[in-house]
Figure 1 (cartoon, helix red, strand yellow):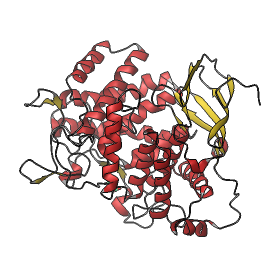
Figure 2 (cartoon, helix red, strand yellow):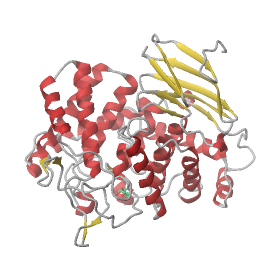
Figure 3 (cartoon, rainbow, N blue to C red):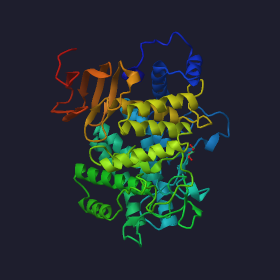
Length: 477
Ligand code: FUC
């Protein structure tokens, strides 16, 4: 499993300095591509070591819990943390490591049905901001983080992502679609028309852990129609409709979802050009908040892209710049998410700067990530971010080197995965693609993009396609 992927960002073989001294130099202001490469493979090692078919998912500390009272009970926070653990699984050729989390999502249904019925009088199943080994799904502790009925729906994104990489129709039919449908059923019942607009909104809910000032200047946390809620439901409904279409089932339920989608508010750009975090333009109480939840549409979802939604793309960029200007990214996992955001915004230097910031501010001498305290999601989120800088496949094409920073002028990567079952290996020199090999595992049509070059190739299962630097077919081995 470990050797399926190789990443080479530096000609240094790492023999010159032990890891802790290497990291110390970076913390003193240096940069080190070998450290990045090492941290990348260390993240894959941690995933292989903490999440295998039949085990529990990797929790906040993976499996490396120090003592009997770990931070946040070493549980499964499902308002960013455990999802971040698994963004890297499929793309770094560790699909089987995704399995424990995929199983966990279905296991939430038993309690989630009770919570849906007893707390909300709704069908389907629901979970809030945190769960654990007993699959708790109720809202608990403080409203600012507990009153958030979106946890199961966000987790469901992973059920569909696994299908996008494997196209395992039996899995979709017998497991993934039934679970996603039941999560969607909850929101068919839960959403209500906003009296001001008539559009369907969720609520009472929050924008994870952030608060805002209402029109009277009072601080509040609970609102109707937070943007992230809408984005998660938008994706869940679309994934259900796509799955039903693939399976040729449930036309009636798909029509219900299509109708609901038309009744939901659009993503809105506020007066300052940023994406609005709530359905009304409330000022955040913490403008540098670690959660940048309303950018879920940019990553890990695919609702914002340069080509399809240029205005929202620019608003997303302004949103991150504003968060960072006010101290955002101060926890390891938040910094890791920002690497992914910048990669999706096709900003290689910004993505690279935040990798260095993660190393300088949120990495321990043993390379484990710190919130602080130690929290493993930053390790896994960084691996996802580096991979997104090299390869993206969320927007309908296999996009080669979409965010390659100047500092990674020469290098190669082998064995990373794109959706539709394409295994990609590539070498670059002086910042330009030199050679590309695509192994088609499923026989899909390959829509290839490199910069402004767009090409399409029909493939058969097992085909190996080779290209040179300007995507001209090559017979080089
Ligand atoms: C969420 C985050 C915290 C922490 C906790 C485990 O509540 O907002 O920063 O990561 O999960």
